[in-house]
Image (cartoon, rainbow, N blue to C red; front, top):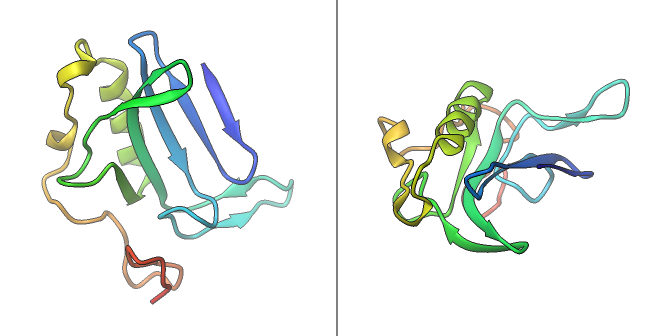
Length: 123
């Protein structure tokens, strides 16, 4: 199933019950946000979360980083890797996607003027 967030983002729910949420609105850990000439939201980096979706509620968050439910400032290539891995999960009860990343640092370009710290402040 596809779901659009009209202020900037989308989610995909797969047959295995896993949902991937990709958000890039003002309240998300994203940067390079803007509006295209045709009025669509855009961003260079987005916030991603993966969870099991049971009747519209997040019943289990699937880790993308140690100690965090979401991974911020993710580029398009890494979003595609997360989506592919999430769609292939066989057992959501024990799923863990931290192996996708070699580091435990955000994939952000901290020199980006829109980069926000975890406290939400623009540097």
